[in-house]
Every structure is written in structure tokens, then in C-alpha cells.
Length: 414
Image (cartoon, rainbow, N blue to C red):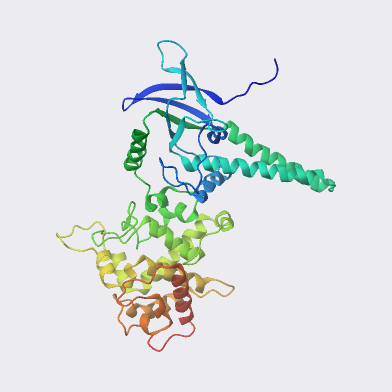
């Protein structure tokens, strides 16, 4: 009587409703159950009813779960071809017990509509923890010092705690009953078509895990940016009256803090204070506002001024006539600023301002074949008649190095 019988399903409390003429079961399941009741997607084989899954993206979701105790994720969407069994608690209610066949060890009736990466991410995270516990157990089986044994035991308990989180924390799951595979494919298309992706600009405004984003609201209060940052758009078109988007402010912040081609490391994210970042970025904005006449004019312009029909803002004019209208060039200058301010003997802000003033006459766009950008070591970083530098990382890094080198040894034309 104590022996367990073969099991191939799980039962959850659920609500049965109707959407689009289909029955929908709404429930919440432990994270650890996802790879059990839903098929684990294979990055090497595309599901004919879904898009190809990206293993790295899935792994990052598992890492997100591990690193963020206050994680959040929307409900997954799945299709049931008829294998789920719903038993009402009473004859008049929509609440009942939903029995879901396992995808592991049997023929699953569920297919994922939205949430493949979350399923694979949990599976990868589960395997990581399992392997890590096995490695610790092997180490503990050897003869080790009491100090190392205590360290291993603490590590094992931490891993067990991580696995228990996957067991004890839940995520939503909506299961649509649709036996027709053709209609099921259309469901996937409809979900994808109606989803509005989050732009990088919006992410920059609300993703507070990154210091470049977290400091955004303070940085854009600078006179050069105030009232001139688009909170939604990632690209500055000719019709956009703003100087740049929120994403671009975050990019410039990263350039000032970590270099034009770099990222702010996890260690730096933890050690840098918001105040320190804000001060450094505002110092840079002060320098370029004082060094470049066109940017100084923008700081003095009223962004809320009423303009005549067809009249361009100074930011729009800048994009048409100057390299400074390119966020890429501003990132490069941010990287140069960082290079000159780094080390034991940082260059004074006034000296950097004076150096940038020497660059001001050379900021006309598009660049000509006789400009400093085409007749110096920077020529590899500009296409003919370009209005911005080449935005490949290697070009950005090289251009920063060239311009920073001009501070000590400038070409004759500078």
C-alpha cells in the first residue's frame, strides 16, 4: 500500500473560463513543474508551431531567477489538444481541479504558445543546481579539512535553498483548449502580432537594475538634455524634435563610466554609487556644452517654445549639419572624456573643454575628403560623406583612442 503507482500527470486548482469561443484553464504552477508539464524546447530543432528558441536567452532567464529574489514574469500560454481533465468543485462554479498530463515520460497534450524561453530557462537552472550539488557531494566524500567541509556544507545548503525556491515559487499558466493544429498555429501568430515589444528607450527608463538606467532621471535634468529626450523612441528621425532618446542617454552614461565600447561590469554596478555616476556624466555634459558652440546654443534654447509650421528645432538642425547630432559621436566624446579623466593624474575639466574646443571647427557634417576625419588616423572610422562615425564597436574604440591621443600630440590641422 505504501508503494507509489506510476504517475504521469499533475493536478492543480484552476479556473475555467471562455475566451474567443475556447475553454481556458487558468492556474498557477511551481516553476519546477514547467519542464515537467510542458515540452522542453530544443534550440537545435525548431518547433513547427513556434519560433526557434535561443538557448542563451533561456539561460539568462534562469540566471535572472537565481539573482533576483524579487523576480517577476507574466503567465505562460499553452495549448491543450484535449488531454487535460477538469473536475468542478461544485456544479455551479468555474473553480475545479485540473489534471495536466506530463510532457516527460509520456505523450504531452500541451504545446507552448508563449513562454518557451522560460520553460527552457527553468530546465537549465534545475540542471545547473543538480550538477552543482553532485559536485559538492563528491568533494565532501573526499578527506577534506574541517574548514573546507564547513564551506562545502554551506554551499550545499545554499544550492538546496535555490532548488526549493523553484519548488515553492509559482508562475501563471493559461491553457487554451484547441484540438485543431492549424488554428493553434494561428493562435501563436495572433499572440505575436498583438504583443507590443518594449523599446530600449522604455527599458532604459524603467530597468533600475542598471546604474546607467537608474540615474537617467537625474542626468536628463542637465540643461543640455532637459526637455529634449524622447522617452519612447530608440531612433532619432529627421522629424523628431528631440536631441536624443532615453536609451541614448544611458549609452552615453556607459561611455563616460566604462568607455565607449564597454559595459559596466557587475562588480562596478555594485560598487558605483548613483551620485558618483550622475556627477561624472554631468561633468561631461558641462564640458561639451561649453566646448561646442552648437551644443551651447541648444542649452540656451527653450524646448517648449512655439515654432512656426516647418520650423526645425536646434536639435534637428544639429543632426543635419553636425557630427554632434550623432549619438555615436557623443558616445565617442564620452569615451575620450573617460580616457582623459582616468588614472592617477586625471586631466582637469577646463583642459578637456579647451581640447574639445579645438575639435569644434571640425564637427561639420557630412565630412569631406579634406576633413581631419578623412586625412588622419581616424579615416578608418568614417565613411565618405558620413554624418556619424562607423558604429561598429572596434571602430568606436579605435576612434576614442585616436582622439584621446590627439590631446598630447595633435595633427597639424587641429
